Structure formats: structure tokens, C-alpha cells
Length: 109
Image (cartoon, rainbow, N blue to C red):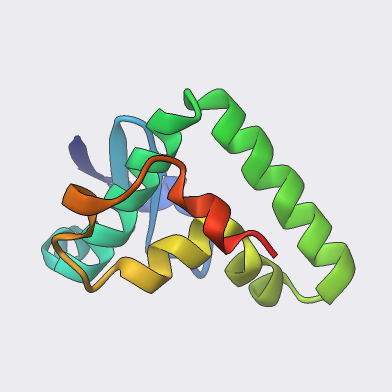
């Protein structure tokens, strides 16, 4: 895992993005936000499980599906199974040690 600060790579309104094996932050102070780092580490695990490229395809398809259904960007983003899993466990710092493979399936809606 590599932590990088590059605010021009982050979409407006977001604090970080994970592109395996990098976690890219909008601001250097974000690297010290343990909850945010944990959230992004969960995305690293998801990306690794799906062999990276399929993760991003699935993410985009699921986002588009939810955007059509919910008609609001933020609601669609929060409905993505990968995000639901990450938000649900971002404060559990032992989660990745016990996380079952492909756990995000539990969050599909």
C-alpha cells in the first residue's frame, strides 16, 4: 500500500481514491485520518479480490444502475456494494483480519 497526496487526481467533493496499490489523498492531513485510511484499505482488498480491472468495471456498472434508479449522484455512490461494505466497517480496525472473501456480496441490493 502506498499513500500519495495528489489533490488534482481526486474528483471534486471526495477526499481520497484507491487505485491499487495506491491510496491517493486530496490533502496530506487525510493520511492521518485512520477511519478514512481503513475505508480505503477495504477498497484495496476488494480490488485485489476482483483482480483490479473487473472491480472498476463492476463499480461503474453498479454506480450507473443506482444512478438510473435513484437519480441522485450521492445516493447512487452510497448504494454501491463496495462503498456500503467500506462505510459499514471503516471504524472496525480489525475487520480486514477477519473479513471473509468477497464479503461485498452481502451488501448487494
